Length: 207
Image (tube, rainbow, N blue to C red; front, top):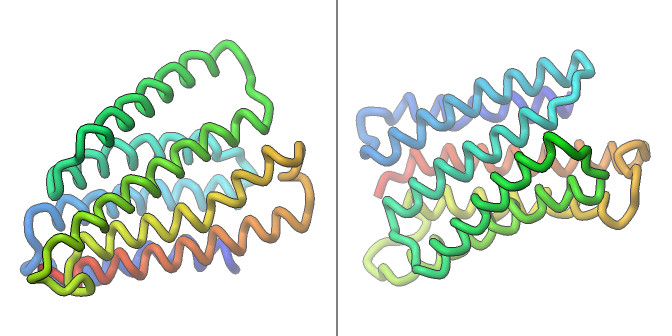
């Protein structure tokens, strides 16, 4: 049931985006198409889950696409400071080295979790910088700024799920512990629903 709710919540921003399509600006429309791409990934993720197929590779693929899209999207709307550009470059370099290395060595759970944690922490820092940049514009109410809703959604989502990827570093084979599996599902589902509702608000608020 929770998995279904998690998957279905992605429809929320799609519906709101369609309703207000005529009033969206160019960047919002690009974001809408990215949400459409996310729907496809969510559908594949749901299918592999019910078929008991390992979908970690699919999640990694989505995270890399997410990284590339939002690096472009946020930099287009609010140019990054130099230190954030350097940090982005270092992360992309790390991912390339990781993907080359993983073809020859099968990483243990703790090392695998580190991959996710670094990306999640970057997304938190990236979203934080966007939000801080919006505070400099005193003429616009933050709650009526679509970038605020997008950046806040990502900040909250990745802070939520950071814990469930830190835990495997502290305890090996944690994914096989029933209580952890339940907590993983609840936290991930809650974070997804909140994120998608806030993404929906980004189409409603168009300043």
